Image 1: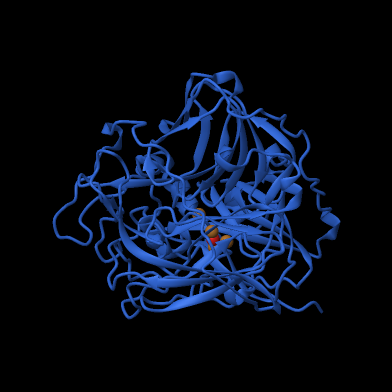
Image 2 (image 1 turned 90 degrees about the horizontal axis):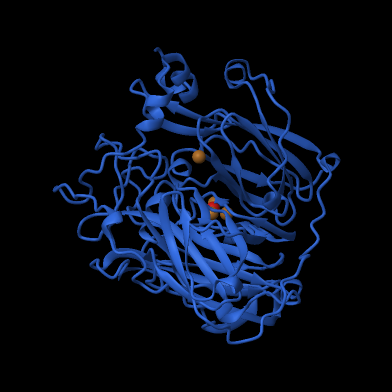
Length: 536
Ligand code: C2O
Ligand code: CU
Ligand code: CU
């Protein structure tokens, strides 16, 4: 092989027939990281289940009110949130784990905003001077001359001016802070904030730097959805722990290049506890579910196969509830779900994700307040006509491998982060992005600042495309799933398929990013800038 870097992973596997072997060797090496001794992984299935009550993240209260940056006559909420190292008890039977959390909690506090009412947040970096997870200094932005500890906060799904969007290079070091303005000019939905620092984002997020951000509005209020204690956030993420109960981030066999292409761990945490339980009344509940994992896709289903209804996706309410028994949630995606426990008084119901048990609901005998019927229509979603698009961009997702078939980098459109901006939509214009997935994995593709709709997915002849850049479809277009028919900001680009999204670049001029939300991929070149330019 002459130029290993340019060999596409799929092509390599195709040539060597190593596909099935590669699929079964995803487990990474768990060896020493910041200590010379080997830290042995804990088998999370040995932990007692459903012994910790589900924690509720604190809802932040404003520290003060300050003049709005866009209208100094209006005072808006101002919050100060510090990123700090702390200890968190992840399970009754484990010693507290070292984590990095917003306000020292895992997950961070929830911020609640009203649509149209801006807020200011001062994100303060009070992290310690050294990182406790294994930095790979060969990755762009994490070179040895860069500070080890850096952070910058992004509001995922927020339509935010570029200077407040948490551009990966706008990180700041311990002792510094950054004030961000979130206008909240968008529909009620479930957003989240998380670190986005160049080259170490996966480590900062794994350490615990994320939290929920809810936007509410009158349309949502008027629906009579469950509120207060009947509205429950479920923030899901997996972690590998060592036998001391400490976070273990896997590393490769190469100490100079410890990056691993994916992390799938066996401890599943909900709101910061492993397999917690939650007492509920026999009535409908609203669950605000977030996949905050680095790389794991969740496939959520009740063990008894009972149905539930999805009422909202990443960017807000669906037109009508979608009844389902299994919910797929890729990293970065959110789902707004109604679960009706009315017929389950006295039952214990387990929500699972594949072979993992996420949480047990313990249904009490009686509901304390009368239950109203759930709405059958929610918020109209006008489908965007393809004819509105002024430009179609064909964007390839690609993985490269070395001679030993280890993934080396992940690329968007065969470009690296440092290459000049190539996606430059005009403000207010509509485009179709055809995401051509030439890899063997599903990649959750996320665009900052905008919301979009999924048009379709379609199988294509991958080899032909990689060699000649010619798109030959091998099947008919597949419409999005019913729960993907609303507004999204993160979409699964399935392997061997072209996933088409339609996007209107409403909002602000300036530089943003689009990337794969598998954080190991985003940290290793599967992230590109895009720039919203003035309309001609
Ligand atoms: Cu959830 Cu660019 O991020
Ligand atoms: Cu985002
Ligand atoms: Cu990816």
